[in-house]
Image 1 (cartoon, one colour):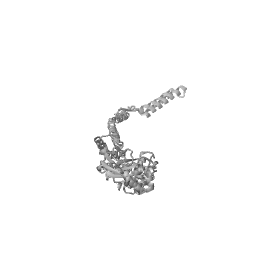
Image 2: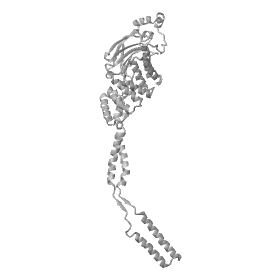
Image 3: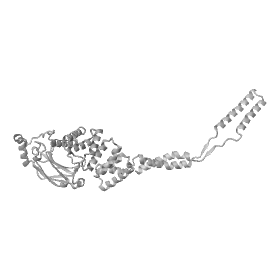
Image 4: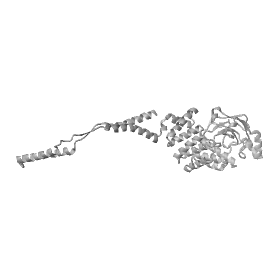
Length: 428
């Protein structure tokens, strides 16, 4: 910021160097040009009279008489003497006014029309890093955010500043204040889908992770501006999932898969959520079956799904403990939802069994078995290898979102007991 002010001061000084010297210099007005022109005419007349005298066109008496006539005209015109060049006093008052007002008006103009927040590189970088989850202590972040909030009160028309404040407030869990900041940003940028989606997200969190009402309206506005906006589609799908409208959730989430890289981790997470919604709605999963057959497959073919499920209760159950790592405990609220699920180690990511608890119940001893199967034939005991995944969902949605906390077990065989799943990785 110091460098900016030094450059601004140098540019102001350069402008004053051009403006002030002409105002401070004593000015002299040139003599009347008409007088000089008349004198030249009289000289020419006298020279012509002399030439005519030499040619014999005029006698000496006529030459002297004509010359005296020219001289009388000269004397008559300049009897009072030629006017002295006018002297003007320097315009010191104007110079002083410009020297004072130019820097003041430039500073006030920048403060009103520019981006003063951007001058504070420490504030801008720290707030931006914190909004992205970089390492800033809570005390430092709180102080910086309050400083930014004070700046925004002085520059209420800085849309980007309001967006930065909203992100920073959200990173601190101050969702009501974040929603207020995003409201100002949305007022200034009503056709920005990013802003509307962030506003809906913060407002939903402030309403107890409930996207009904105003957040839903904001999401629809965002989709009207950008039908393929990924965050908006994810939130809209979450809202429909919470409404138990699984078909609607699947519709929104499938649109995400059309615009994100198919091999990305996010695409795989969305696919898993779609499969979960399909299972809850009673639809058959679309994922491919495991390529490697397992021993239980033959018995299921002979005796049917019911017999296989009964056998799985004895040999396919997974049990263990889910706990929350101390390093991330401060990022989870007691009422946050925790999903505990078993899924195939390879192939389909469709959950085989799911349990749902809250952070307040951690550490939690879990047991997942075939009686909790979400679709006929998709059981723990039907797999050769499985993993147990636990996730703290900040939005209460099975679809992973930024800020969720995850933990995964090792790849194990059905029937394994004593698993230890630690929630320790923050989704980014």
